Amino acid sequence: MSVPATKYIWRALPIIAAISFAYATVLVKLSSDWWMDENYSHGLLIPFIIGYILWSQRDKFATISIRPSILWGGVAVVFALFALWAGVAGAELYTQRMSLVLLLVGTVVYFWGFQLLRLLLVPLGLLLLAIPIPAIIFNKIAFPLQLFASQFAVWSMQVLGIPVLRQGNVIELKPLNSFTIKKLEVVEACSGIRSLMTLITLAVVFAYFTYPRNNNQQPRTFTGWLRSYGFWRSVILVGSAIPIAILMNALRVSGTGVLAHYYGTQVADGFFHEFSGWVIYIAAFLLLFCVGWILDRFKPVSTSKQESEQVITRTAQVVPAEGTE
Amino acid sequence: MKRSSVRLGVLFIAILAVGVLVNAWAYLGEAHIERKQLKEFPTQVGVWQQSGSGSSTRRSDYESFASD
Image (cartoon, rainbow over all chains, first blue to last red; front, side, top):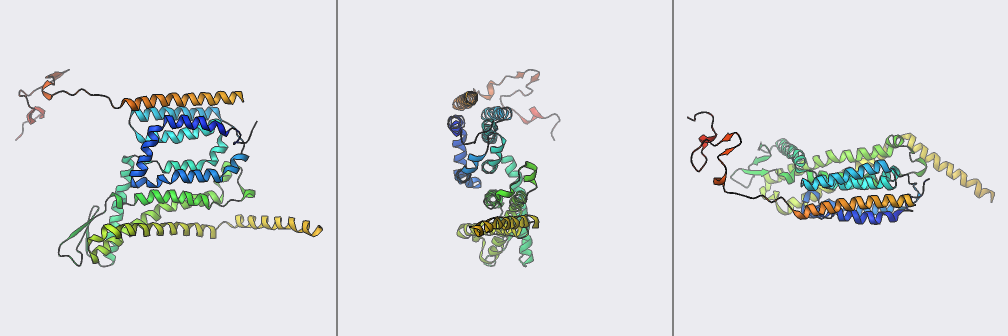
């Protein structure tokens, strides 16, 4: 028997209370990290975005049928609770936080089933993106990005005829207004990992809100969804956020290097540094927007044709009805 | 309806029980380690025997070949 998912929504209240109690220290530390760690400050916005998505989908929750999977949901919940205990015992924050996401997944499947989980994939994905990754992985990504940004900056400065030397992630140059060699260090904050994390999150939000929704054409099966234009559009959008963020950061470091040559290394600090960060970030988002626009321009013909045929069919259905009155 | 209430109860109690365990664990804090002076360290630990004679450890205590 299946009933609307919203019918037993009250069940969520005691479970939310229990989860809040069990994860109190985890949630406090996570909020603190969002507040203090600039690499994950976008996490502060995530609860609001998730809240908005859930609110905007409330009609779908009312129509979807519940088919709880006690076995799979129970297994996920047990595993999540074990991971929470292991994370606390081992003082491992990432395990503790990931267990929260797994527990939410398990609870949804346990009470409502996989259909509702599919509707909640994006909010859960956003929560995943807001969880700080372990430092050991973070550094493995950040350092190569630092080197790439340094290499790109030196290459572009040499193309512009500026004498420059690179030692690892340190760029040595002699500004025009200086008699000594100055060093520009491409530190972790300049690696671009911060804008990379934020832009990927933004790309997910952008892909979700611009997802081509046509109720008559919604794929019914999981494989149908995997083959749909909307799915691949989202994948390409989120995937394109990676090269865009890396390239834009490399351009920012290059621009700083060029300006440091003409105006001194003080351009690498203060107002210009902050301002260039904003400019680059806006430019990155515009590029992301362009990717979306190009994808929509070159949308598969069958999809557009089917849409226009459906509009014609609907119009044709209306016209005789008006004519007969 | 009754079955779903049982399911709700089971999950609620499971999360709450782990919550009590985890919060108690976190409240207890880190394990307390009793610290001692180095001079109190025994000269023999199992099959390991201190080779140096003085109260302080020398480089030669840890070298297996003569230094030049």
